[in-house]
Every structure is written in structure tokens, then in C-alpha cells.
Length: 134
Image (cartoon, rainbow, N blue to C red):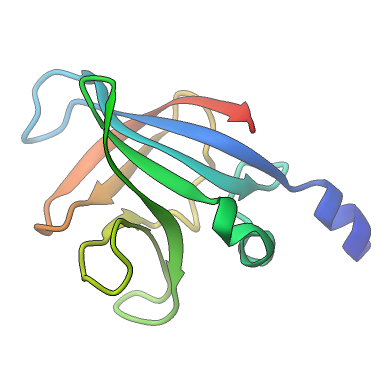
């Protein structure tokens, strides 16, 4: 695949995550979660090189009861424990990030499950509710 073909296979997508059942949450919480924009490749994985070109368009909204309660950006943090991390950052440089657990390895496809570690260090499970073109 040439560089031009690889770029054309990456598309900005709006991904909606809804809180799923997990250890601390016995029932799903529709309307609680995140909505974010990311460049996804044809397999549904976040494409780092495309993100570098479109990072200012890669926003995140944290949702409670379907309403936006925080706005931020999808950021990529190199290094650290376990290597690079994708995170939701609401105030750059404030240490309030919510880290996606292995977001770089997950395919964002409707019905799949992912985890997010909140700013208090708690890991929560989310279901990919939708993936739509931007």
C-alpha cells in the first residue's frame, strides 16, 4: 500500500462509548460515557500518523445522562508505564487525563468493549455504541 492509499484508508470517525456493566456497575448506564473523534483505519484502529495531522479535530466530550459535562481532546502520550497511551485530556497540563486502556490495540467497532481509567485511577468498562463518519 502506498502512502497515498494508506492515507485514503483512514477516516475521521465519531465514536460513542456507553458505560457498560462491570465490577462497580451492575447495570449498563446509557447516556453515561464519551463521544470522541479519531482517525480510524480500515480495521477500526486509531491511526497515530493521521492523528498527528488532525489532532486539533480530535475532541472528546464526557457525557452524563446524555449531556456533555466536560470537553477536551484525544491526546497521545508517548512512553510511560506500558508504552504509549491514548487519553482524554480536559485541561492540557493539569493531570486530569482519563487514559484509554490499550486503546492503540483495540478496534473501535460497534458492540466491542473498551476500558477507560478515570482521573482517580478507577478502570471502567464501556461498550462502543456507535461509530459514525464525521
